Image (tube, rainbow, N blue to C red; front, side, top):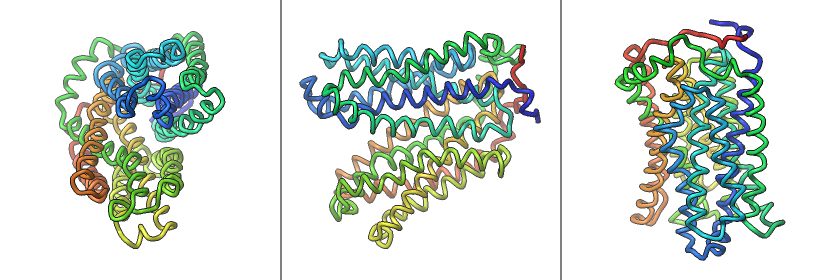
Length: 425
């Protein structure tokens, strides 16, 4: 195992660029969510049509993650990928006051903004694989995952706050692009001063990327990894998107707490989204020494048990117990994603980590889309959120057993990458 002294100190600046990029990207993404009624009114469209501005961001990001983002990060380095993502994010956002009078223009702008996620997220794997030693990958991966939750909180709070001052959602969008512009300048400066450290320095790696990735694509590890990510995404998206409605809806449809108390209860999940990845990173580095499977298993157990507990009368009838269950469920799902990222880094050669990350996330994230769709269908057919909440617990339990198989398939995958620091010239 290489000592951290063999890795350049600038690795922390590269990590900072990725974290700030994640915060800026997610803040722009969710900032219009609380303002969708105003957006619909301004564009003279229905609320359902305006809601498509959120889904198109997710759609374009998933496509780019799957087919482009990881490959760019592998071939040209994570900083290049982050810079491209920030360009896709900031330019459409700052142009919104001029193009925001027409729904079609805003729709395409949101689609371009979604490309930012497809470039920024896959950069995390190569950053961990090449820039960080084993004993620091957990904390670094936790910081990357926490940046998304922090960005969501920033967007949900700052969007309405800026709108209350400007009285214009288009101006709000432009102003919230400022952190993205600052991060873009920082990443460009970092790229200029660290030219020799931009690319993944694996001798002969570039020529062998396609051949190595094809071999990895056929490994059972990849199939089970995608399924683990699928189950985790299903549980995570439903926890954040369906649980608030479940808590707010009147009995017997939901828990009957009302919209205001539901929002207060969900603070526990929000807190878990920020501290969970960092706790996971600490445990990965200090307790499990880079072994990600135990953290996946722990996360799935917490998520499955606590999601099921939300259906128990003794839990739903007590606010303190309900808050504890929501906090632990949130910690559970937030333990899984950093562990998945670290596991990818440990399981694939460094020069294809970006493509592997893109493949796992690009396909796995459809679990969230399908989970939300099925959840909505079951609510409509049964008149209750109970089946949707139960599906979260079941998916987490399935994820637990898939993670066990993932460990058993380890010997069938591609050779483990050798630890190799980026050369400091």
